[in-house]
Image (cartoon, rainbow, N blue to C red; front, side, top):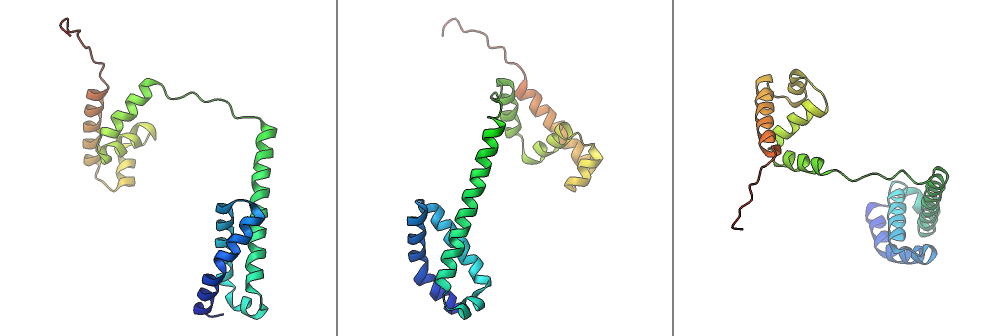
Length: 165
């Protein structure tokens, strides 16, 4: 099967196969996914598909097997969660974390990256310079500017009450 023949086969068969798999599976998106994946697999075997004489049957069988494999995977995953129990509840971030993330987002990208590599990843100035391709003095400049900006943003604000408000 040439490229043009395969493209013509795809155009005339994809809707029909998707409809058939949709009826078999009961899920349109899943049917579209497995049919598309089956056609991808068929593309590399298009010469053999031509010799077999039933390329549509081959694509339909592959799509069905893909759907069964996906179903089995989801089932095994579900069973594993059932055996292990639900994961422990995770508390949401505290207000101080939210403030820190907002302050980091306000930094320029290079400063944010440098501050993160230094304080979260515990890298030295030389290691950051090697990883980012910047000079050590540039890394130090980003760290100083980042610290100053974060200190300004994270400083507790004393808001005096306005008696007239």
